[in-house]
Length: 394
Image (cartoon, rainbow, N blue to C red; front, side, top):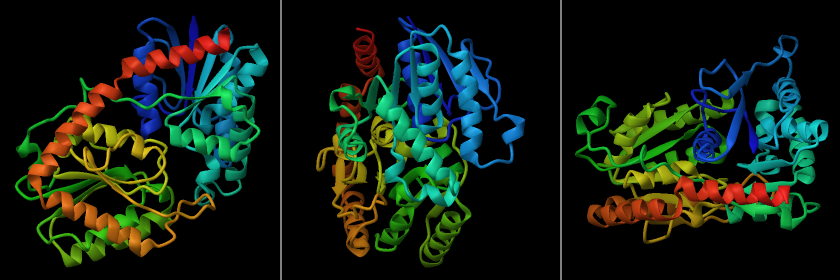
């Protein structure tokens, strides 16, 4: 059986969790399936991986139209596949058109939902209406929809009530424990500007509204003075959110030492060393279908302090592998805390609790690594994905 996987991201051009998911899932599926990857960007050297560029005629068009230009090329080339499997709205149109054109089942994995990311209008302008139309059309017509968490499944059915609930399956994200494991390298950590002898809180994520970075910067002002804040944060959605984060970091750096901002994509080994040295990892997201980065931190033995939203409570066990921070959110799709001050205080309190008890933090980190190994291995996730494929071919 041949499966064509359609994705914007694929190594080495990865900037988010969806790209990690596609890469790892493809590797696991290839153990017993013929998988062809079709992705955006520069040509890849890997066999059975085909990359597509935005057509020259659309190079200066709205980004959503450029995406459609790539998708149509993908849809044409899918001929011969038994199943097409698309990831994110960027490739959903390719999967939908391919299904119509070639008469093959279209399976899609939802890593996020456009109705729950209204701030994307800041980035795409009118293209956000186009991306929303693409997503709705593809979801409602797909042979099967995979949600990366039960929380995401509930969001899908709430956003798209016309969708048959029996066609929506839960298959969690996973983690490669051969790549993600504790790395004891204090010398490397020092080269990144971090003192491994001081307690540290580490954040890893894109600079986007959903990641909640401005709330973390406010909470960090309430942490004990010896605690370092390490931000591995880049790829801003807009100049406005970047300016907001810059201002928040500047204020924090004027008040305390140990504020380190690494605005580049760290190589995997460096990031693993940083996570392994962390007293705790923090995920202050206001929208997070699951959060692969939480699994990466857990696999490296770091406890996780995270917002109790989306699929995060399916990963982080409160009091066992870290702490969950309560949040009461607006129901307008933004995820905005109804009481931002209370959320900031709760985040600061949870972080302070964990960094103030290194022995308990270590126990949580060890429990998190066990949980990652037992519940989120890619082989099991690939097997569940194959079950979804079988269901649409039956």
